[in-house]
Length: 208
Image (tube, rainbow, N blue to C red; front, side, top):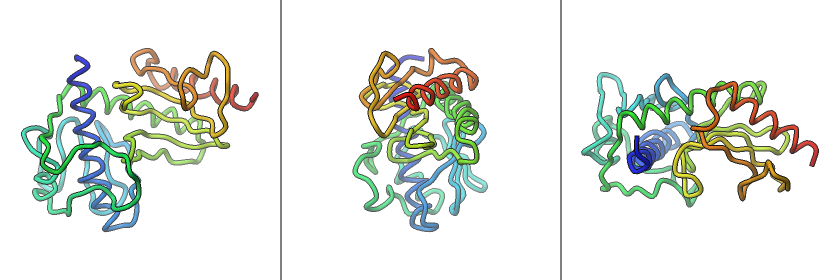
C-alpha cells in the first residue's frame, strides 16, 4: 500500500464520516459521536449507517466509496448530506462534488487501526466510551486532562498514528509532537503495544 493510496482513502473515509454519517446523525439525533464497527465505523444514533472497508452500508444497500461523491451517497441512502452545521471549522476538506476514491487495502488498514485503538482505549479509559470524532477523524478518550487516541492521519502524519496529548504541555524525549507524543501505527503493533504507549504517556504526564 503506497502513501498516496492511504491519503486518498483516508480523505474519502473522513468525508463520508462527517458528511454522510455524523452530519445527518447530528440533525436527526443531536450528536456527532461515531463509533468503531467490525471492519470500519458507524453512527451511534439514527440514521443507522456503517462504513465497512471501502463500502457504505445501509439497510438493503452496499455502496462503494469510489467513482462517486458524498452528496450522491447521501442521496442514495436517503439522508441530508453535509457536515454538522456550525460545530467546527476543520474537517476533511472534501466538497460535495469532489470525487471519492477508497482503496480496499488502505480502508482495511484504517479500520484495523481504529479497531485495535478501541481495545486499547477501553483499557486506559476505564468506563469511558471511545468516540470516533468526525472533525479530525480520530478515536479517543480523555482521562485526567490527557487525551489518548489514534488518528487515521492528518497534516502532521499522513498515515494512522497513536497519540497522547496532555492539556498542559510536557517536555522530555517522550513528547515528540506539537500536541504531546505520537507514534506511527506501523511501528506500534497491536492493541497491547498501543496500550503500553498510552500507559507510558499517562505515567509521564502524571510526573509532570
